[in-house]
Length: 376
Ligand SMILES: *Cc1c(COP(=O)(O)O)cnc(C)c1O
Image (tube, rainbow, N blue to C red; front, top):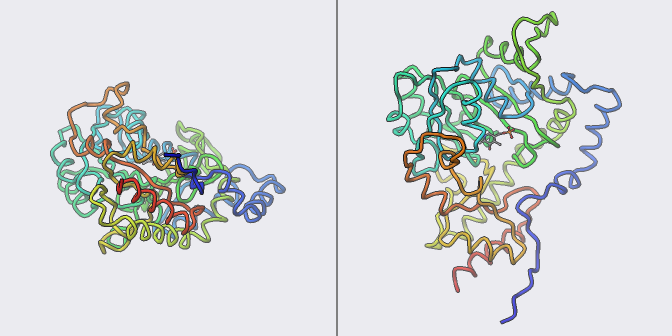
């Protein structure tokens, strides 16, 4: 039988289209910065920080170089260091535990719950006298069960430092991801929902003192008001050019989220009922969670074959993080006790394209080919 030729290209993410789709808007924003020579800690950084804080309903937002730095600085200002243990979900990007490692603390991986996110009862079971903090990760644009997590942390006197890299605009019971702990952190890596043309990140907090310390850390320990060096610091500033790129898009952020939710609904309708798939919850399925669908990640029977089948049809998919949970990266020497839910998840997970470059026809095409794969 002849192999059918792909009739469409639906890349997983289109880095070129990211710029070209809105080139005029971006050119205007960048030209403003370039012609003024305003590169480091200038107006666009301040404006973006103000817009971000306002959007999240939080007192402070501090632009930094990337989310990994945001986590490192966040843990440090929250007082986490050598001798401490920090509990995190093994179902996350390696940046979550590496930030814990780089403040000198010990990352303790735990299993996920039914929802794919950190299991509050697994947190409780992993607590030792050395435990100082928990790092919940709101993955794929879905918030963790923060009521249960906060209850456990309050009872044991633990600090929450949120890895909300994938969850800008996601809400749990109406409250924004990133605002549940002492510190929240965001990534503006290009493929994140709000991305820039390189690396970028932010720290958010309601605590004036933590915010002040974070500002010192990101700029060589220099006090903004006096310019004096008042402590050891780093260079982890959000570039002003990237801030301009972020600000330009941020105006349309609600539409961006709405479009992702629309695509998720289409996938849900088109793929619902296939017994070989476990889909993420549809938008609005659970009134406690407002999902932004940073990713549309499902679990699938024969997922590697499905991915090849889709690739042959011009459809890009992604098996996140090389198909491994953090505790499965042997080189890191993390505690390796089995985390059964997480391990099973990584045998079956697959992400479908969900971004602003995907058209409704693209989504229908992806659905048809997934259905076709299981029909045969
Ligand atoms: C992207 C990401 C990070 C790291 O963000 P960078 O800005 O690339 O440093 C951390 N945690 C999670 C869950 C992420 O998805």
